[in-house]
Image (cartoon, rainbow, N blue to C red; front, side, top):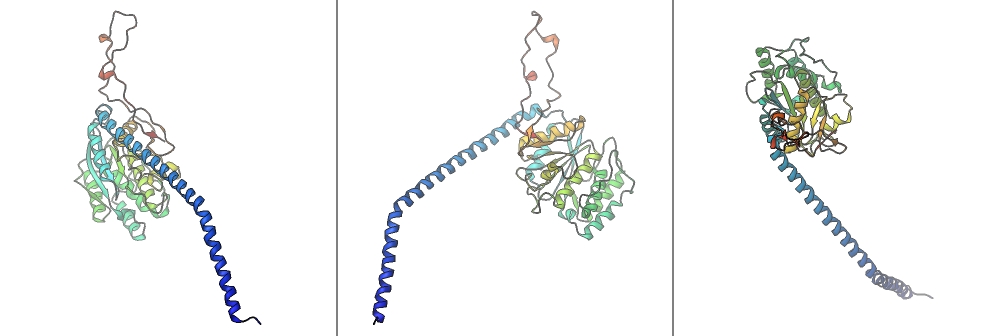
Length: 358
């Protein structure tokens, strides 16, 4: 008869055999496994070193681009915006260096930044209360009052009707093409009304409407993605400013102008709106192209998108300053039937900035 001790010894023997098997198996596998892990570790380390080297190289390239832009600005920018005035329309969360950099570039181009309008988060609220308030403020301008070339656009989102109307009214107050569409009293009343409603702040009293506008986007895209109402509202406001003035540019910072941003939504073509944009205006190269974009709009060129986003094509060479002119024929050598061109600083071709246009 098999007693309890027999069962106990059998169970102990089974578990002992299992333990011995585990020990022997682990010992046999330890060598190859350890070797494979060390090989994988070495491979990952080499990949990390390579990526770190690429990052450093790209950072050096960015630094070189900025140094080039700083050095080339005195050649590329002067006189491009002579006689023009620019208003900056700054969205909540915009990067300060975009605002300051664009201001400096406009001034270097001969333009004057007449005012800065800081939009407030309340402007982008889509609640019924906000829409009602914006529609009421829109009545500060008679319903039929439109600036030359401006026409009301249907909102891509029905909730944005108030923002679209706000853009139309603000455009009439702060920009103009050939002449003010509104009296100074009307313009002041509009800005004061929007300021009292918590929709914007103005840095100083508006004297005369500007001829050009730059809308500066938030540094971080909204969490809701491309079709977020804030994106659509910014695009609509830029369009209204463009229609009411001689040109408007939507400027953003990189990578804040990437996926989910207003510029990304604009580039997708889903809005059906065409306005010029620059996606890297936090760098000197992008600030140069903000001025270039305004200059091209003044010259009657179609809106275009400039920057460093994937899929861009090489951008047009920067427009040379009006102060750069060919060497007069009278100063060329006359002792040859076909003289070599005279090389001088003023005749040197403009360097090309390493950014792109969609």
